[in-house]
Image (cartoon, rainbow, N blue to C red; front, side):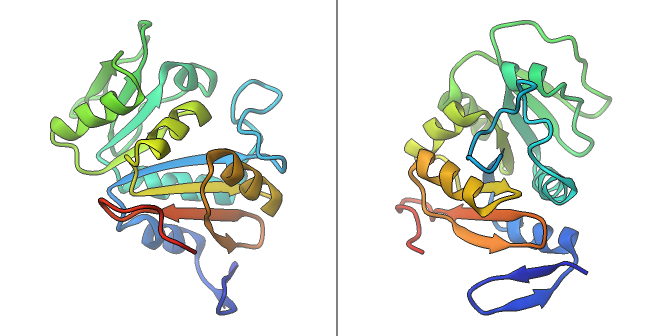
Amino acid sequence: MPKVTDSIGFYPVETDELFAELVSGFPITASLVADENGKTVSSEGNSSGLGNSTDLSLLVALRRKSQVILTTGKTFRSDRYKFPKYADLAVLTNQELKLSAPEGQELILSSLGYLQTLTDLRLKGYKRVHVEYGITGISALVKAKALDALLLSSREKSGVLALASELNVKPLLLALEDLYVGLVAWQPGSNELDR
């Protein structure tokens, strides 16, 4: 069983359970995975190979709690997206997508910009949104204070810290056996919570 390390000490926990609880209270989330240097794009031009199975468990937890997954056309194409199992899909793009929504789900295309697309999803009634933009889009949402939580992950602590520095955020760091997760959380109408 994996162990989690925090300021209190070590404790055993099932990874899926930990991540489901960690993300459950945050309506608007975003996540980024990075290499040991804080880079979010691998040599293949996407996020392939940056994470591991534990990081995938984090992504699954974020997606399962969401009503809609929001990404960009560039990320959609480079990461070869498939339609989410439990949520609708919104894509910020100026290009046509060769994808159709499964029965009972919706594909939403937008060309309005990072923040406006998220705002429009909220106006459509989506209360739980997970954003999977690249670093530029996430940075725009952080600056606009449009997120409730941002989760940064890397196999190395240095990756989370470098990515946090680039985004100008201070995460609470969780150390699992094979993954570091940096959680940055905001309260509505306030600045980043001091850690």
